[in-house]
Length: 192
Image (tube, rainbow, N blue to C red; front, side):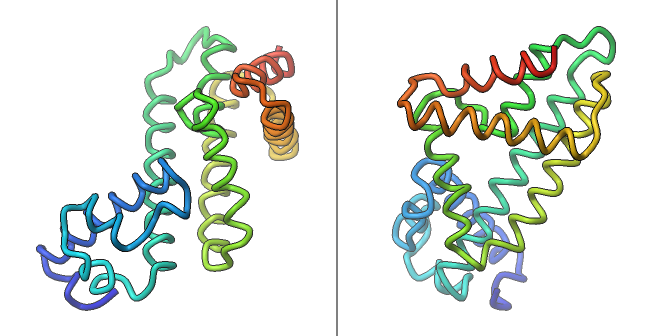
């Protein structure tokens, strides 16, 4: 980041670019995050993307972090809003799936999310960030289960995540129009 972003105006512009890039990332994946598209979405000149970011990779990394942190904050807020007693399995399943699959249940949204997750493997510059975000996600998921009265440890959590991911990928391969519903059913059965 250049020193221009250290001014209040620069910080606002950089934040607007990151937010715009995160929106594009969520809508169309990594390929949607391009200098021109980000600048247009942010309402800033095209040159601002290269002024505030040394490379497109740096912008994509900032967008990925912004997107991931937003989802974690939404998950924490939803956990705080759930009743502390008599929490229903369906409430926990929906919260967990929001964090693992994203809040949009539509087929294309789930496909896009899994494409982004798999696509990070081809982007070495994202690997350290994804490890951090993944660890924070797992901490939050563990807290959700424990506070909801489920007997849960890190190993069981990994098995549940693998179960959800596997059921979603199988549903996507079968072109099931409701991969989230498939994952919900499998997770609900495992938790009951």
